[in-house]
Image (cartoon, rainbow, N blue to C red; front, top):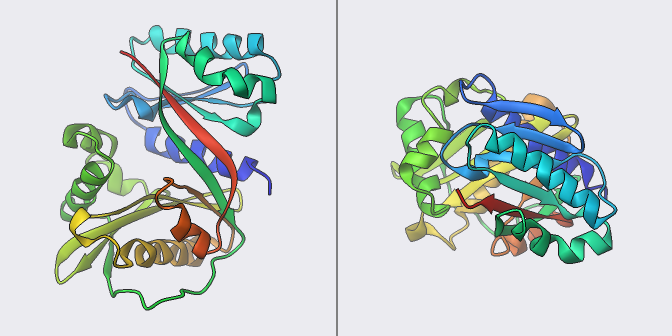
Length: 261
């Protein structure tokens, strides 16, 4: 399968989050895309490759372009690298190369794709799923996300700020059981694809099917609103088996490197 829809949808999700923010920065530089929210959480001040990298020297040039861009703004930042942009030789050395530019590896995740999802193999729990469109649902979304992704609450709230519910293209959902917020998911459309993000379940309610239930809800709602498209995910390694049961297959891998600021 082609990795480009997966990589492009990820960049589009950051562009949507960045749009209209005072400190945001969206730019196309030689071989590098910038989609930065200008927030404290550096993983959301992101650079991406936008074309293939064949040599180690070429990778160094891309890293230098990105570093100079963010240093001029005195901003902590991250480089989200889709490995399929890299030649084998560059891929073998990429961690050492990034380290030489002050970047350290913080996350690796498979990029997944599916034409459609498979029917559920088990009975899934009922959820009262609500779109994030109020202060109450936004706060519940933040609390689950901050806990599950191990991000300080203030950082997560800065990314998903008070204006966030107006960003309809980044549709977020909270699933409730007996009035308690249990799980979250989000969807982002782009050029015939639908990306699923922020899938999380409160720790006390895991291993019960809530993640699958809200993922299926987010997918179904996105298809109703935007039409059928290729389905996209960036999974944790722990969640990979769930998504494979749903019909997703790994088509690439992302490595995220953070600056040390």
